[in-house]
Picture 1 (cartoon, one colour):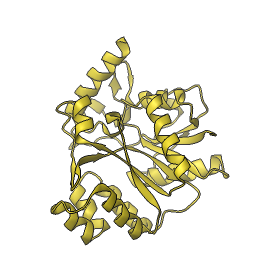
Picture 2 (picture 1 turned 90 degrees about the vertical axis):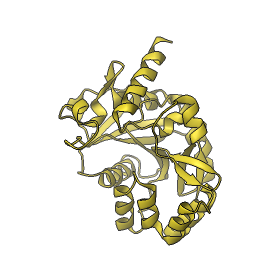
Picture 3 (picture 1 turned 180 degrees about the vertical axis):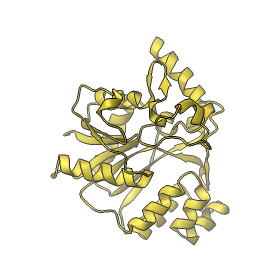
Picture 4 (picture 1 turned 180 degrees about the horizontal axis):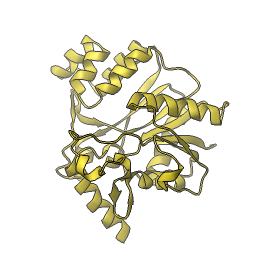
Length: 261
């Protein structure tokens, strides 16, 4: 298969109330050092070594940050918010290759990701030709790799899952009802708040564990008039974003051990 381009959202400076405020020292969260390099550089390195990725776009930082890659590396300024940076990433990928249908979107705070994980997701997802493909990792998968991870798990009928921070995106089709996507981005750290935005059926289903992951995706796709499916990741790293000091400690230890192998 041909390669696709990827964008990484890396903007955002933690404020005084953010758990990682002291670690960031006034800079972007994704530039916090882990095992000898910035958090986001680990993400870029995975994309750089992945066989399925062409160009790499970093949204939220500029060339002065010192990030490097062997593949073509582009930068786009921070747009002031999580949702705004996602839109900027999608739009910029479409500009880089107007003929492209899909791209890879991911957060810059999942430093545990490796090239083979990227290739697995792209090769599994692109042949499906769907508009919405959302990654989930089960509690069992995450806790097996990162015991005591402290993740927020969503209680579905068929188990507890954590949403991933990497997804295949359709870049040649505008997002429907952008105001709803903006509200979802604001509520992304709270499953209940996200359910309120999507609709009462999702909220009821989650509160009483009436819905499976597949069921939620079906409601979601009907709500946004899209075709899609959940992607169940065998890799805990795709959902192991760094939000708290505990996560930072876990990933520092994990990456330091990986570097010794």
